[in-house]
Every structure is written in C-alpha cells, then in structure tokens.
Length: 203
Image (cartoon, rainbow, N blue to C red; front, side, top):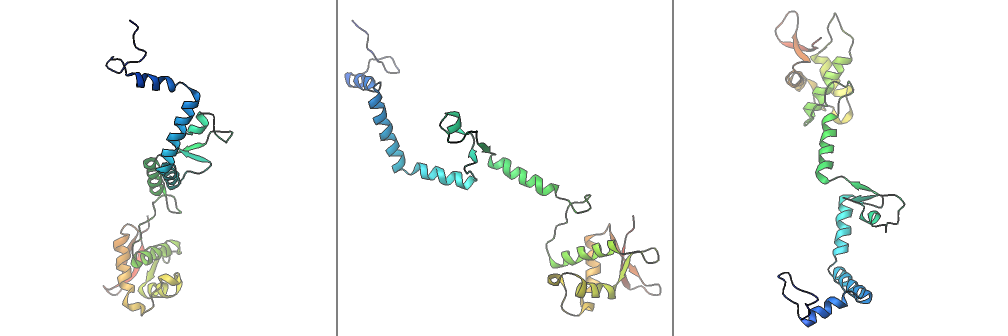
C-alpha cells in the first residue's frame, strides 16, 4: 500500500481534498492568485496606509527607513544604495538628553543655568554685568542705585523693571546672592550696616 503524499503534524494522512489543495499550491498560476487574494485582504484592512503613517510619524522618508532597508536587501529597491535605518526611539531620546546635558555656557566651564522666572533672568544678567566690569579699588561692584538703573535701562526691554527701581533693587541683589552664592555677595557702606552694593567674589 502506497504511503500518503501528505501528512499532518501528528503523521496522520491528510484528506483527499487537502492533498489536492497542496498539489494546487505548487502551480505558479494558483500561487499568483493566492497572492492577489492576500494583497486585497491587506489593502482592505488599510494596513499599508497605517504602516506609512507609522513610518511618517517616526520620521522615515525616501532617504531613511525603519529598522532595515528590506527592499534593498530583497533587491527590489528603487535606490542604488541602501538607505540609512533610523535609530530606535529610545536611542534618539537618549541622544537628545545627552546633547542637552552637554550644552555649556560661552565660557565653556559651566552648564547653562536653569532659568524659570524673571528674577532668575535679571539675577543672571546682573552677575554677567559684574563679571564684565573693570575693578574699582580692587573690587568689581555695583551700588544699589546702579543696580536700579541697570534693570531699568541697560538690560533687554522685555526684562526691564517698569516701576520705581528702589522697590526691587535690594531684593534683586539679595536674590542674586542667593542664586549665585559662589559668585556674588552683598557689601556694606563704609559708615553703615545697611547693604548698599553687590560685589563680585574674586577667585
């Protein structure tokens, strides 16, 4: 007795219809017909459109692909060279964080200070002003009056104080010292105890 042409995973013979279907699958015309059926099913499910949208969202374009350039590997790519695969999302996010962490001030030694409020901006500008000044009697400093003029007339328009400077100048000096304790300190007049100026700490 001849053994069956096809068996299932358990080794039992397949039915005559199943055997006939297996034989049909070897026919090139039948194979193309099945491929058309599968393609139509995929198109009806919008899977290709959804894949295009996913690639677009990931930043893939004609020059880049996602993961691997499968078309090039299969020899059906319309490009002469293999396209560069986009890095994975986690790798791209990690790179962005690394670049942010590596940003430095113009001096190159310190990272850019976090700026959250208008007071932060003014305090930073005040410190930069002191750093750029020529020492007076061996000290770079600004009096409270000079600080008031500075925040009203010298800094960029959007950061200027519009009211009476005496209302905020001492507060700003104190805030700058709190924000940059290793760079500036409050100074007193020669004949009084009231802080009248802010001084740059010379290293």
